[in-house]
Length: 181
Image 1: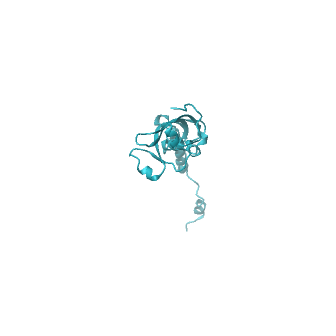
Image 2: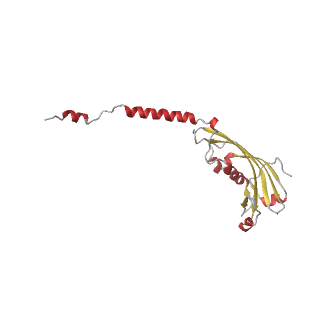
Image 3: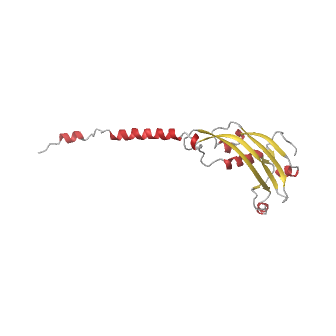
């Protein structure tokens, strides 16, 4: 396996790299992944990748590897910042046509490649997006939702107490003007 610790290319031809059994390792700045950063609190940091391109016994072009990143999201329970370390092991099978995708043996996660080269960061970004929780939440012991609930309860108490205070009725004056005959 050649190419360890080299600078990561922006674009790759998975079919060419697979025939040479290339191995790539390095980092991609989070700020290059616009779709991902729109789901995150900020675009600070890097994504570490360690991937290898190969052809398996079924003559399927594969990308196998690991992705690691430290991300920051907003907990949807307490609305506070939360750390979410990402560590993904993945394997993708590349196909040049939909017909080729359909012929892949069961169990392969197929990716259609109509034009080469393809953006390496797009592949990595897709895998991270799939790994993000739909509704990010702290673990119960780390969540600040009790503070939020306490604040909400205080607001409810204030509103309840305000409702219980007798409001002056502007029509009380009219009642006092009315005389019984």
